[in-house]
Length: 464
Image (cartoon, rainbow, N blue to C red; front, side, top):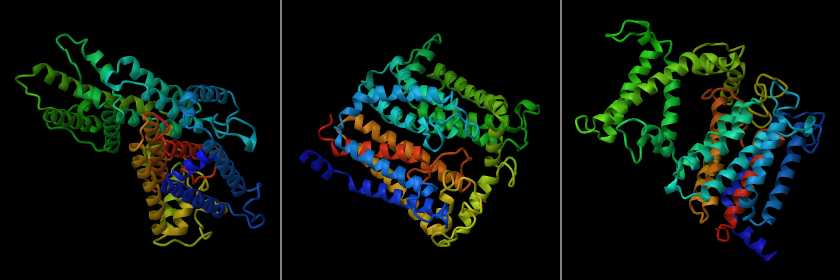
């Protein structure tokens, strides 16, 4: 009993209070947006707010149990939990589809989404794996094993399909990069097959993850400018016009910048210059291939969402209705909002904003509390993320540190993408706002994730 009291006294109260505030604000917003005058009792389980408060109660009860368990257990159970979650992701593929996706395990309102808990399981196993590695002596096997931990649940989630959760799994790549687990061994094994090339390390391998996201950024820029028709003065054929010409310029600029950063002498390092130029054009060809064939191979609704988000087409009353109405609801709040339970555009009754209690819950909050309230909410999330990073850096255990960064990245992805799609900065992919959106699986998984983090931190001196 004294030990548990001591752990509670070591609880990171700034993070816990911020976490509880988000839970309270989220619950209040769900109650407001789904309010039923005939059933005003907040504990009425026939209403969404009644179910939400029940899941919050269950989450805090599980959190209490988490604080009774020794923190060392999470490393021991990481693999079994991961395998159980993988099995549930396989089973769910054989369940009847709901809204076009096989994502629910259970019956009716008692169903849960294993994909939500897959993020916790992956974070635990990845933390265990990286904490047991000697990062400086990493090999192809160690890098591929880490990638496999991410890919197995990601592939199963993609088969449901659940694009939002699938994107969140890419957040773990940043954690790997932070911990020094790079793709250098893989890139080296490929480059050293080239005659005359003998590398001990590569800039590309060490910085593969940021390069990957730069690559995706170039893809987005290409799509944005793909309808700009121009020709380079020395090229007149179709091959180098439009999006391909844009990518060509971006690729050449990237090669020049890379040469400058690495201070490669053209006379002294001819082989490396050739390699850099070849890699530059491979990047150009890859982006062009993605734009020309990969993008065209996407499902029609996926293409529509991307094109609508990038402004390549308009359909305000059709496929872009959700995003259009969400932005209207956020804007209607003005500077200080309309007041609590006074949302009109984003209320459930008006149904102007579909899923206003789940994926678009930021809309009613912004409509009720305006820009000032929205800014305060964003500040709370940013404070929580910064606090988690602070907690990660003070851990003595590498397992604790890696897990903390996993939690930070998962929450950042959810926060940034959800609010982004509510204000038109991100495509609509269906992703909940942490501790805010209605949904048992969502609130339960985020709370468990946070309680494990708080427990690990409170016992950080005893966990090595």
